[in-house]
Length: 164
Image 1 (tube, rainbow, N blue to C red):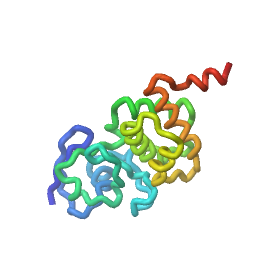
Image 2: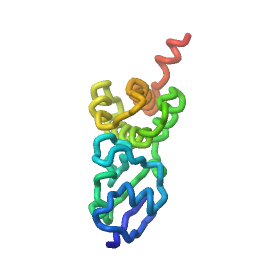
Image 3: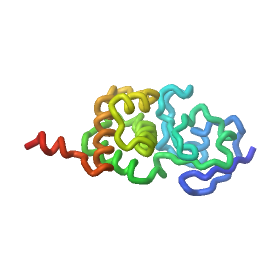
Image 4: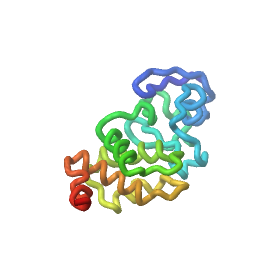
């Protein structure tokens, strides 16, 4: 079967079986390896990409369901939310092994795009489907809150005041 996707802004036509998971089309056929395989049953979130702007688990989504759609992977993620998150991740040393982080960032970027000032409960609910084997959940939450603050212009204020 031939499917056509727009991946990271670039139109791609692939000859793959229609039940091929989107994850493998991205990794094996397009060499976009930032999206990770974690569980294969859509439970861990390591494979999260955006389909038409919404986070989906690419390990269980047949490529045929994405035919004609817009797919964004971590390699093509752009915009103020992802930049603020990447800066926060670096500044706060959010990641440990880093394996799950592309999925964490894609989910968090969608959260911030839809909720500029998420509460801890909002963050926990949105991120609940993303498993971190290193258990850096508190640092992930802190990174999201820091990024939200950066986006609103108030980030780091409490951190700077606390450091004085």
